[in-house]
Length: 338
Ligand SMILES: NC(=O)c1ccc[n+]([C@@H]2O[C@H](COP(=O)([O-])OP(=O)(O)OC[C@H]3O[C@@H](n4cnc5c(N)ncnc54)[C@H](O)[C@@H]3O)[C@@H](O)[C@H]2O)c1
Image (tube, rainbow, N blue to C red; front, top):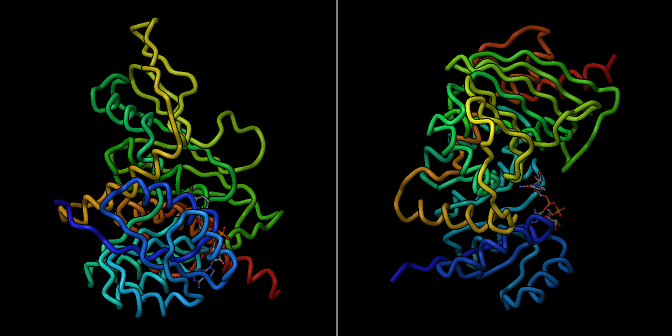
């Protein structure tokens, strides 16, 4: 029989609810405790899902008393690192964290360092990797249906760190996780957004060249996007537009004018089910999860390289070195101080 795992849910807000779909679908998981400083939200969560679990207003108390094997951490971005660190220290075996990794590149690297040092499995909610359409496109690309992949067009609503992480992660999944070679970018800060306690631009643009020579254009927010969040994959023999959620836009295979991508029925709930199941499978097998921190780190490096390019007003070669902060925040702070 499969081992069962004690799960602590940390953060009972919107994404906490999204994760419950995945947690409840996996018979290996048993929710043993909830934590949220908003007691009312946590109590309602407990009642709505019938967990009948103890509720803590301090996640440290959850870690001490409930001793979960797995923590599902659905928290605003600046909390991702400290909560992961505390979970790893408390002996939690796996943390399923919300994306993006962290507000600074240094914090992303620190999360990776802790994961390597402690072996506490760390995954991020790049759940769209589990969309049927995205899985199918990965297969079509591997089968050579579009020929050699030459270019990618990446689109996402604002902002680069919060939403762009999904698009860049999706793009990486289409090119065998090939790291970027260089990034050149621009950011429009005529309006400064603040999402999940992280400031950002209202529009970003950039060029990314990957180590395999694939060239990508990226637009995050702003006018005239010719595609909503997703990636247009352009090969030597055809192209396909794949939205974030795995649904398709236009597609063509040049030598087969009748070709159409197979019709698939996407249910977004299945993305979370796949995300959670894969994390637990990999906890058991020791394999790298599909939504691993290693992959999230590759996407994050591109995002922070673009911000660094804005700061340096120069093309930035990867790997990203000599940067630990959030370069966009440094620029915004410098403007305020002048
Ligand atoms: N994967 C996705 O597609 C997706 C979609 C939306 C948001 N997100 C990400 O999810 C994260 C959380 O967003 P959300 O929409 O769930 O926010 P939310 O505000 O709905 O929920 C956050 C919850 O965390 C609680 N909280 C705050 N401090 C806490 C602490 N110290 N310990 C425990 N709980 C605490 C809050 O009281 C709140 O209930 C963000 O980083 C965001 O970028 C991801």
